Image (cartoon, rainbow, N blue to C red; front, side):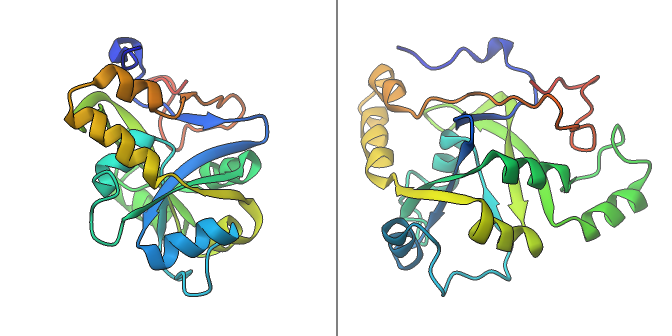
Amino acid sequence: MTEHDPRHVPTRQIRARYTEETITVYQAYGPHIGGPAARDGRFPEHWKRERMTWIKPSFRWMMYRCGWGEKPGQETVLAIEISRAGFAWALRHAALSHFDAAVHADHDAWRAALRTAPTRVQWDPERDLRLQPLDHRSLQLGLSGEAVSRYADEWLVAIRDVTPLAHRIHALVRAGDLDRASELLPPERPYPTAGLALDHLVPTTRAGVA
């Protein structure tokens, strides 16, 4: 099995591991946060709710961000299942983190949306197994204020420590065995967005959100 062929992937597309009720997103923390979170299935009291927290449906982009769980302060990689209803709320209330003339009337309109939105979206280049950028982009979702409380207290379903999996895949990549590494990747597929009205995040007529 080889890596997914990126040639026919839309420029902006949400890809994730999901069920009928939940979607899996990834975060990485130091052991003082990640350990208790995985053990107890919830974030510990010393997890800072007042800070913006970024969740990522793409496992490979998370590996790029945390260096396969080897960057200081990101040694514990968490797979976090949240409700799809919560994820939909986050997208519905999000603003783009950057100005896009196809979405915003002007820079003032963009700044106003960004200032009041409890969530924000970035479309960053997806990564291959060697963590090199691909032509298509992956969703990163930033949560702040009300969204952070909803995330921790309402949307959260389960937390798993997937650091051993990250290390196992990384070892195979370093050994040059990309086929075996790819077989271990969490299965991600295009996320169904029908009815989510994402024109404020990417105009479907231009970029094609699957």
